[in-house]
Image 1 (cartoon, protein in one colour):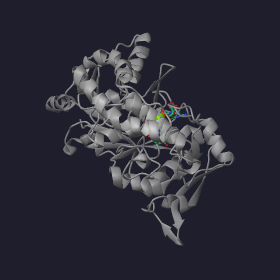
Image 2 (cartoon, protein in one colour):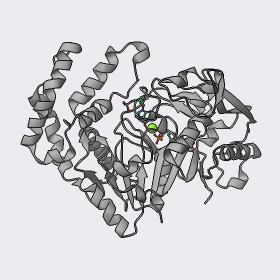
Image 3 (cartoon, protein in one colour):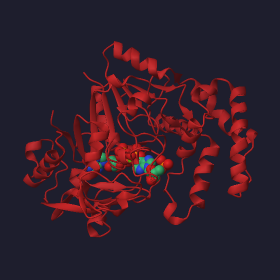
Length: 427
Ligand code: GDP
Ligand code: IMO
Ligand code: MG
């Protein structure tokens, strides 16, 4: 069996959590390779809802091992809270089941503060609408080579020294730019200290764990967070997150070879949503958008914000294909479209007088395009209990075939509801 990479192909919240959970059946190890607790991955199992921000979505399968790779930014308090919440459900996350790379960067209290202050000080149109979890500032420190990594928790005097150094620059910003009194080395250290000993137990060499698994012919499932168009390089910059969300980063972000990424599953929500600011050509601010928002219960799993909703966008997806190279698609939330008279698919854009099939490459070019739509007939039936492709209404099949024809990639998984059973497999 081949390793599997699962990535989001739009602006996040495509249903990666659910798909990772069901694909975990076919895997032995599940690895998060980027992002942090800006992610909110929802699983519905036996009528219980779980939302994971850091722990890989394979964790409910008791016999599988979950790994947090070097590419992740980890808020230790959030991770501990997640482990404690699961313990209340009698799911015990021992260091045998969860391992954290010593190279994983730690989100510190000053990262969260900087994220929040920066957003507050921006004027309306410049606000990114971050999740306020300190993601950007933590990745900045990583790149500036002043970050604190999980492995540093093994040496508290080194940790203290690093906090001291980091605060020199941060406090200048807090005090002189953001009218904030700043943070002291001691208060930051005391805040973080209680969780350090706990996390030390989970430290491991993730790269070597994966290598060992490969040698034993085990299957590794790489779980992406966010979505392709939130990628720091290829997304709608500057309205993006601060990591590479594309499939290739599964290798860098976990410490394995690109040769180990074989099967790539791109998750496509049957319509489009976006949380936070930034261009969204197919956004529908009228009744259809409201319908999708309400029927799809489109509220952020992390911040609770209402998600912006609109039609499926093939231009965005075409770019996702070339960036990720998926071997197959998983379509989620198809059930939500049921009841619409007409369903629209954006097939190209008008941009500066021309028809284009890929997004413009200049910054914010996407804000200036006009989507061109193809119209398809909807269906009235409730499809949320259907488990076989042949039982889908003809118009639902037509919708799926149109997507396959335009993108030229097979749809192997169709999700028609949040729970595990509400899945149509087309292997
Ligand atoms: P992720 O971040 O990509 O894991 O997605 P989220 O968990 O943030 O958002 C997806 C939401 O849709 C969650 O509330 C899921 O429970 C729900 N969901 C997933 N698949 C389906 C589906 O096929 N139909 C419906 N109605 N809901 C789904
Ligand atoms: P999952 O994994 C949807 C968005 C934020 C904001 C931008 C930058 O659940 O799909 P950040 O806090 O990362 O600096 O915010 O990115 N964003 C997401 N949107 N799903 C996510 O994760 C997201 N993670 C970040 O809303 O617009
Ligand atoms: Mg989410």
